[in-house]
Amino acid sequence: MEIKAMYSDDNQPLLSALLERHSAKKEPGIPPYDRTALSFAAYENGEYVGGVTGTIVWNMLQVQLLAVDPAYRGSGVGAVLLQTLEAKARQQGCKVSELTTMSWQAPGFYQKQGYEIFGEIKDCPHAGHTKYYLQKQL
View 1 (tube, rainbow, N blue to C red):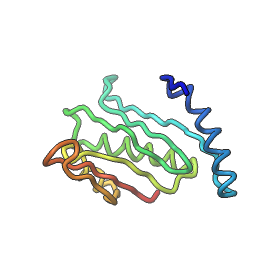
View 2 (cartoon, rainbow, N blue to C red):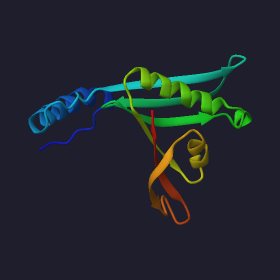
View 3 (spheres, rainbow, N blue to C red):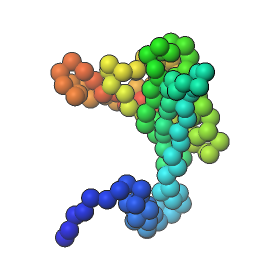
């Protein structure tokens, strides 16, 4: 056996084909393992002030990154970016959104946006911090 490093974009179609063959044998009606990347950016007077990325897999939105320039935090930019991402995911048939965040990042922000914590890993990445798993019905 030989293990090789591979670009994710090159590996994705190969993995998708394997998952489709496996799923079709085990459970008829499972949708194909297609990934759709989404990305939105916010600009104020031509300046980049924030952005959000996500991926749709099996009709689920996975929010990957959301960041807002510190000068614009609390102004609603993050909420608008997240709502835009969620709206696009809904248009593409998503019923649920999921994400992870760390205790020092934004669990409270996501809860204000309707996300609920469904899991956590304490002392991650080290003592006193927590990794949170959140979901929201779209």
